[in-house]
Length: 462
Ligand code: FAD
Ligand code: NAD
Image (tube, rainbow, N blue to C red):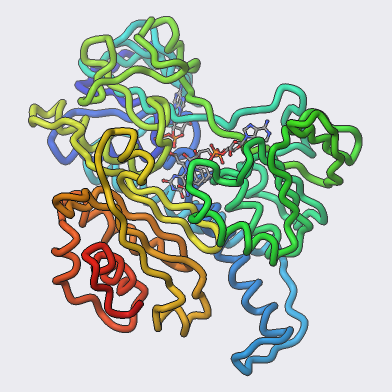
């Protein structure tokens, strides 16, 4: 067996691993990334990118379909239809371009990418099995970036009919009846897209509300929109079994309800891949199923780091990327530690939810006295011209100082505003700083200005 020695070995080329590989290469570190499947990981191949591509297809189709019925804009068109096979082909084309892009970026940085499956022999030695056989890699530093897998329901295992998000994003026909178990990020993003594409969608959610991590005011516009799309929402229910075409959902009251379905999408969360690659034999300290890390992403074993979904919530691509970049810099000898004030999160539903920093509840739990300023999109000219008046932007700031600790929003096309939210919080802006800044007119961003003015007690347009 060939033996390769390297300074840094990264297991997994998802957003965490490949970004770590690129930055390591830029810093002159001799690094190898091992990936069992395609570069880009869950996010690029079966997650963020494919789901946003499907959402775009569904949005376009639904807009055109609206023009075929009554609308106020004077647009007419007749009988639009959707060829999902073609749409999936288009999505696969984007994924494949990005796969190539990741491989090229690693190569350009001087980092080697090996497509193969890695198994630990000990904390610094890994055997990689690829098409040509086995190779042993010995490294001074190791980064575990193995990601996560969808959680399966033991009573309703994955099959041709009961599918995970990865399979849902590869369907070549719109199912007539789609049951979605889990009214969280994945269930709502993909469920909404299929409802727009013409499926009869039912959502079964265990909690009292969909998206239970957000407050009711933020999720109300989404629930209203799902209702308008004729989506049935069964909250307070657990999916308990499948009998032929009927999914059985049991309510907290013990009553069983039948939900007819051609396909059942199970989206009840993701579990870390901490049981792969012989990781358990390393006996690392764990945080439940997640690998325990400190604020430099170090594990309990020296010079073994872990990043991304395998280390816990929030399981988001941009968190994994930021950790990957930081770890490469630490290995290069730079002084870095995880000192982020916020990790933005976006739920790409209709309308979109964007949150960044602390919610009112989280601030209160930390004993911080906060006040809010909120501005409705119904009073924003740009939102009116986009026919998207449902929603608002809310600024959460420390009562005494006005320092902005959190920004929350719900509204159409607000995801791009997440950058402004993050910049304000990371740079320690106060409500009067935002109040003093000129926001371009007419844009939905003016609602952020107005929410800050509202906090200060002198909103101009409400
Ligand atoms: P992963 O992306 O899971 O990559 C891990 C890689 O490690 C995989 O490629 C795997 O093949 C490889 N690997 C595992 N074990 C081995 C081994 N033994 N040897 C070699 N290779 C191995 N996040 C967002 O921020 N925004 C979104 O819009 C968003 N949408 C999503 C939509 C869906 C449907 C899903 C499922 C997820 C979404 N996410 C989103 C979450 C995002 O995909 C993850 O947070 C992100 O991919 C985590 O990156 P990672 O590098 O930790 O792991
Ligand atoms: P999630 O945690 O967002 O939602 C799961 C939902 O399923 C919860 O509301 C939970 O109450 C419900 N649930 C759990 N068990 C159930 C059961 N037996 N029956 C009915 N309902 C049940 O998980 P997800 O939607 O699978 O997404 C996984 C992770 O992927 C997210 O937490 C997020 O980190 C990431 N993700 C992010 C994005 C984004 O950033 N836009 C998009 C998709 C996924």
